[in-house]
Every structure is written in C-alpha cells, then in structure tokens.
Image (cartoon, rainbow, N blue to C red; front, side):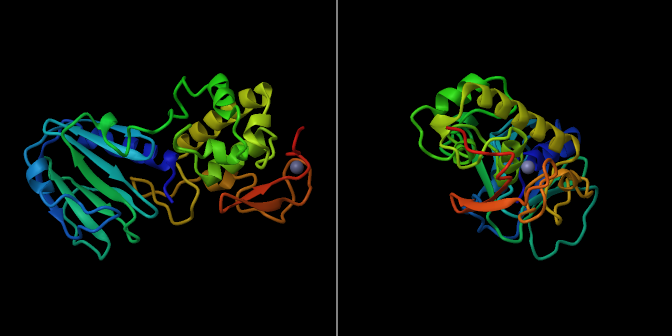
Length: 274
Ligand SMILES: [Zn+2]
C-alpha cells in the first residue's frame, strides 16, 4: 500500500513537470473507484492550469485555476507521468493530458483509490477537514502527542495510527518507529511517558524523512513515480521479521495483532513500562 513517503515521493517526482501546465484532455476509462469519479471531470479540468500540487495526509491536491483535484492512491494506486501516449493497459483508469503533451496516468488494479473534485477550499472538504496534524510539521511535537495520549487506553501503536491524531503513519512506519524508540506497541497510550513521547516523535520524523529520501517504499511491487523501485525495505528493523532475531539484542521477534494489524516487536528491547 502506498504510504505517506511514497505519496510524498510521487508529489516531488511529478510536480516540476505538471506545475503551470494546462489540462487539454481528460480520459476516464473506469469511473468506479472507492467513490465514483465525477462524471463531469473532463469539463471541470479542461483548460484549467495547475498552479500547485501539495499533499495532505495521503491525498495529493492539484490546485488549479478552476478548482482542486484530490487524488488518493488507495491500496494499489500509482501515478505515472508519460512523456507521450502509450496504449493503456487494463488498470490504467484515468489519463490527464497537459499542454506539453505529457500525460498523468492513474493506475489502480484494486480500485480503492479516489479521484475527487472540489471548487471549495480543499481543507474544508469532508474527507480532509477532520484530519489530525501532519507528522513532519512542527505541530506534531512530543507535547502534542503526550496530550493526545492522556486518558486514552488504546495501545500506543493504535494512537499513532489514528488519523484524527496524526496522519499518514501506516503499519510499517508505526512498527519501525516504536522499535527504534524502544516502546512496546501494546503499551496503553496514557502510560507512555513524556520522555518516551520525545523519543517517539523524533524517530517517527526521522523514519519518514529517511523513507522519503530513499524514494519511499516498503513493498516489493512499488515503483516510484519515475519507475524506479524504492529502497526503504532494506532498512526495516522489525516489519515482516517475526521469529527472526532482533538486530539489536538477538532475541526472537514476536508478533501480536493490534487493531487487526499484525505488529512485530522485540519483547526484550520493547518491554512494557508501568
Ligand atoms: Zn531486541
């Protein structure tokens, strides 16, 4: 699944080629994604100039002179930038052609992605307005995390994966960050100390930045927006390593289900604190 670093990598990959370009053609081959693609997307986008592209959580926001296009890559989506027309394959659902004849192609085999359009300010859109802070912003601080954790009995892993608290920390990055901060993923959120919050926020930012730097990714089949595989998977400490020895202490790594997601941790390095 594309996680925040992959989305950020996609943004950085396509932005220089798309910014200040005008849309000259939109082709939708399949309308049914997670939500239906607006039937009038072509009318909305035709002649619109892309002023900027930003990211909020895992949504890419194409700010145009006519409105904002919101794209989510879902479970298996990709955006590719084609320098000319290539015959579409089965899962290439949408093409957006620009006045330099480059084509933004949206591909999504499982169709859990989304393409939406709004003429209002996107931060007020129903899917964005209740989101928590961005993990790489200054307002995601140790103090903020600690305050958010008060009176919360959920495991700390569930708290940092809660989009209403902080966005875009998926299963992989949550597990990795908790290992590096030596915090047990099942520790109740309220019982995480201020010092642990300092460590956790620091490692979350470090892990995400490193993943972005390395072109995103985590999953074997992911290709970044320039078609190269990401390399982050080589650096994973715990994710996908259940029953293998901990890199730090050699203890056999355990796996536990938290919020229906399997979570690998080291029972020695990540002891629950009272
Ligand atoms: Zn260990």
